[in-house]
Amino acid sequence: MSEEQKGEVCVLSGGLAISREPSFEVTWRAVDKENPRTWPVWYRCFVVAATSFSTTIVYVCFYHERQYHTKNSLDGMQSTFKSSETVMLLGLTTNLFGLGIGSAVLSSLSELYGRRPIYILSVFFFGIFVLPVALAKNVETILISRFLSGFFGGVSISSGPGSVADVTNDQYRALALSCWSLGTMNGPVLGPIIGGFIFQYLGWRWINWIVLISTGVSLILMFMVKETYAPALLRQRTRKLQKETGDLRWWCRFDHEQTGLQILKTNLIRPVRMIFFEPICVFWNLYIGVVYAVLFLCFVAYPIVFQEHRGWSPSLAGLGYCGIGIGTAIAVISEPLIRRVINLHPSDPSTGRPAPEAAAWAVCLGSVLIPIGEFWFAWTAKSSIHWILPILAGLPFGLGNGLVFIYATNYIAGSYTVYAASAMAGNSIVRYGLGGVLPLAGSKMYHTLGPNWAGTMLAIIEVVLIPIPFFFYKFGHKIRLRSPMIMRDIGRGVSSK
Image (cartoon, rainbow, N blue to C red; front, side, top):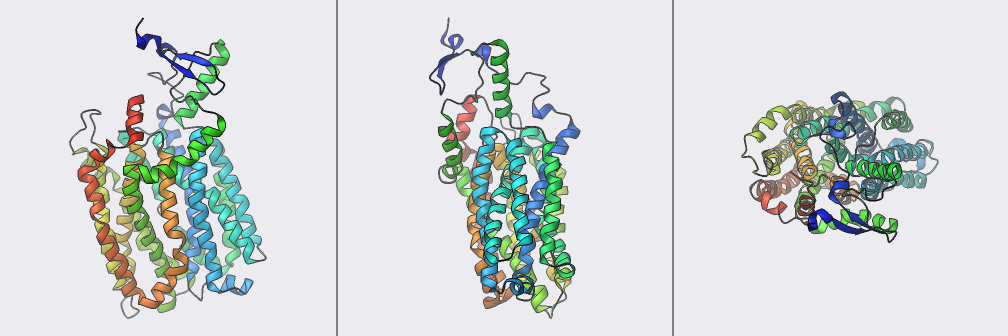
């Protein structure tokens, strides 16, 4: 008997040595109804829509506060709690830190216990901690609750792309991610628009009540979503076969060979390790983090430009974000055209499909559009210039951001299929870490430099970073081959392409 026939010996956490015979490996069959990628199309679309809705609610809850960065619009909360603007803005900072930490912790746990239980628990507790904000009697309650709601809300943002990758094939992943992004990318737009009208006519507390009601709907949807994470499903099938047959020789490649504490430690540390040691994550996290930070500061600028300088009401100023919303929508609906361009690229010999780097050309296009929109907005922000021009600046800006987030996410999810949630969690740590301190500095920067020069400075930073996606487009395949985790998955037979 050959070594391959004998199989390899695996020592489980209980100390029992089990021979891993190839004939007893549990994997997906050719036609397997339990494989999420073979579920009915309508149900897979439902999974994408449900996770997108849950993520959108988190974004709406987060971004609606950005409209209240100006002195006038903060009066509601400031007058209630007799606090300074800086103290009130700390709620945004704590919320961002919560999002970053929660993304790392809970998303990593989803790779251990499966996505479904983590989604349900996170949505439930997200709603629980929105409630104290609506009923808050002091600032401390708001700061603590904002951190905790962000902590539990972060999993929807970072695990969403992983769930999409779970239920879609490589050919349609970009389309599915685009559909998922339709709500999430416009969360920053919907938040200020919805929040502006509610704040003006019902008060700031009612914004949280609306978010809480929407979270209840999200929780119902999450109960209707089945488990999608392949390793969790295969582990469940393995345990079932072992129980039914009484034969412990059944195994799958995702069986744990560590104790529960070791597994938990590995899954919590993995996102941080990927930030510093995975070449793809190092470069993409840097680029996406800065793009996100500039997007954050742009949302600080809008209420200053439209409310303070032009004297618009909070509800009317919220409509100023429509340009960005339309731009991101264009990025989503243009996916079929972009996919055609991607398919024109040479095929990877190992997969027969275009290499993942083919999607990076869309990021390259977005990297150019973002500073164009930023320059445009910066120099049309003066009140003497017609209001339609700064709103139209949101079109290239929103389109560029949409292309960057959709196709950079697609590249990361496609590269780290099994560990996509951890990769996105690490990305979230960088993004929200950079953004966490900006609420305290962004408003002062725009008031000190003025929208013209503040926007110009941000646009220049974006221009300096343009070479990063172009470098990936040209040399990304070589960087992927230097990734220990990707090569490990290829060795297992889990293609990352």
